[in-house]
Image 1 (cartoon, rainbow, N blue to C red):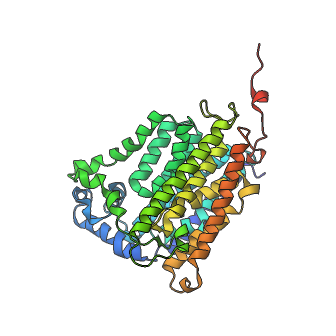
Image 2: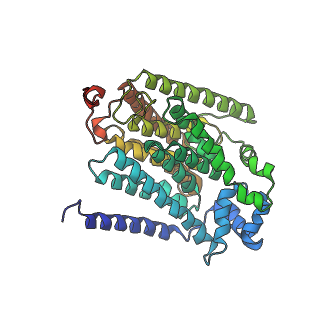
Image 3: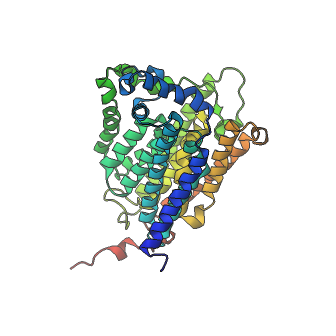
Length: 416
C-alpha cells in the first residue's frame, strides 16, 4: 500500500481532523474576557427575546447581523452557549483548511501531498486553534470566505469570488484587508469591473432577513462606521508599525495621519503591482485573457501581501487582525517553499505572541510588542521582496510551484 493509496489518504485526513478537533475540545471549557463581556450576553439576549425575533433591534451588539444570525440559530439548539459559539467557529476552521487544500493542490499538484500538508498546518496554527477553541472568536468565519474568494479567483469565477468577498465583509469589516488585492485583479483585467457588483450585492442581501424582522436600515448600513470610533489607541496589542510609536495624550491626529499614510502607501504598492504586471508578457501558461503576466502564483503572493501590509500600516488594529495573514502566509509558503518556508514562522511568532501578550497575565511581562512587530515587519519584507521578484520574472510559472517553467512560445499551438 503506497502513500498515494486512497485508503491511506483518507485515513490520514480523518486522523488529522480528529487530532485538530481534539485540540479544540481540550480548550472548549476555557472562557475568555471577550466571551464573558460580549459573546455570552449577546447569546443570552437573543435567547431571552425570541431568537431571530430579537434581531428586529440588533443594537445589543456592535457586530453586523450575519454573525448574529448564526448566534440566533444556536439558541434553538440543545447546546450550552459556550460550546455552541466555539464549535460554530470550529466549523469554519475546517472550511479554511478545505480552501487552503484546494488552492495549494491547484498550484502544486506535484507532490500531491502538498495540499494536505498545507491544510493540516492551517488546522494546527496556534492562532487558528486558540481563536476558535479557546477565545470563541469568529475570525475563521470571514477568513474562510476571503480564502474561498481567492480560490474562486484562481478558478476563473470572478462573480463567485466577489460574492465571497462581500459575504466576508458582511461578517467582519477586517475583510477590507484584501480589497487592495481585489483592486489589483480588477485593474489588470483578471476580475471584470462588473463583477464588483457582487460585493455590495452579497453584503446587502445578508441584511434582508434583519430588515424583514424590522431592523433599522440606517443602523445596519452604519454598523462599521460606529465600530471605527470605538478604540482610540494606536495599537491594541497588534504587531503593527504603531508599536514603534509612542504618543502621549490625544491620538486622534496621529490615527488620522496614519490612515492617510496607509492609504497612500497601499495605493503606491497597488500601482507598482499593476505597473509590473502590465510590463509583463502576455500568454502565461496560467494567465487569464486580459491579465498580462498575471499567474496563479502572483495571485497568491498578492493576496498574502495585502493581508500583511494593510493591518501592519493601519492604526487601532487588534491582535487578531493578522488572522488572514496567518493563513495566507502558509499558502504562500507551500506554493514557494524554498523561498518562503520561514514566513509563516515569523508571522506566527508575531501574531500568536500578541495573543499571549493580550491574554496571558503570566507571560505578558516577558513579551515585547515591538519585538513582535519587528518579526511581522521581517515577514512583510520577505513576502514583498518575493512578490516583486516574481512579478519581474514575467508570466513564466516557477518550477518550484510544482510545474516546470514554460515559455509562451513553447506553449503556443503550431500554426497550420
